[in-house]
Image (tube, rainbow, N blue to C red; front, side, top):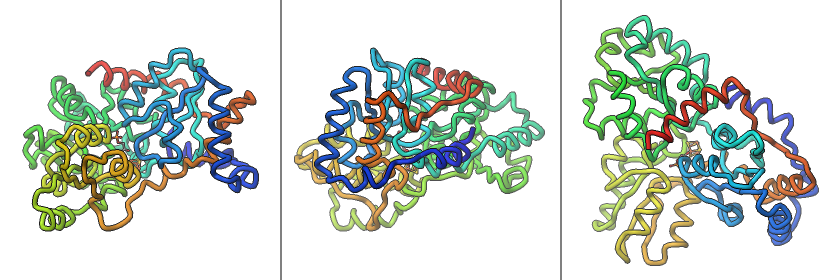
Length: 373
Ligand code: 13P
Ligand code: SF4
């Protein structure tokens, strides 16, 4: 099931009783969340992605980037319930990697990822069939960024492919090139391009596949020559960072260090000092010498938190405009409270359950990623 279809299906069932929860005083909500957590004890683990707002992340037992949170889904110990403060593909990944006894809840089912919705199974299957005619798919490893539906992870599992995150994309491309001459990388063209070019692959061997066009808008010769075929997807938040924003900061503060997420365009990554996952960004800033001035190109909630939590560093946001991930923002304290109090009462609301066929093959693709290191 693509995440788009999943979201359609769940919109009908997602039902926070608005008048009961959304109008509660904020302090009361936090007290009740703490009480529900206490009642659930070790049976509950709350996972929080770094883009969650402060009022939500403060309740998370573990914070992380997509890779760290996926690993946490495997290491559940005695816990029987995961409440995932993140987006839909993350909750699906936790469901795939955790045991059948564990339930996964996404507090608001409208928390999707617009990038993940840019590739769906029918379009990727058409692409694969067209590539088979002009190149032969035996020469191609499909790689899906973890920001994708479970059915696309399953497609990769079933076709000798693998999943990657922004933390391990290079290692996963190396894994793929040890097996085949070419890769098909979806849905994020920027992570794919940034990783491939950093590995020294020539730009003329990197092409973009536009699913609206025949052969993705390429000639058969261009596809035969290509080593990396990138799906034409992107993150609407990270595309807001522009090369001129980096220039502006460098002009104002020549000593500034610029760090960005690899979902930013190539032009932005090339102008930055370094690029990496959210976890990498946090670690790099924390480990830098006291007094370092950083400009950060990733989602605003994380940058603001880094600013508060790193008093020894000066942390600025790269864009002059307000770039938040609005779908991550769907998870708010009222939805979290509602999910938890239902668990206390024995009801699992907004459960994410990947269908069996997708689950098996998606797990294969995810386990290949975890085994690759
Ligand atoms: P990370 O895995 O780096 O946290 O990235 C997830 C994401 O969705 C970035 O937009
Ligand atoms: Fe998806 Fe972009 Fe939001 Fe990350 S920041 S969850 S890629 S929309």
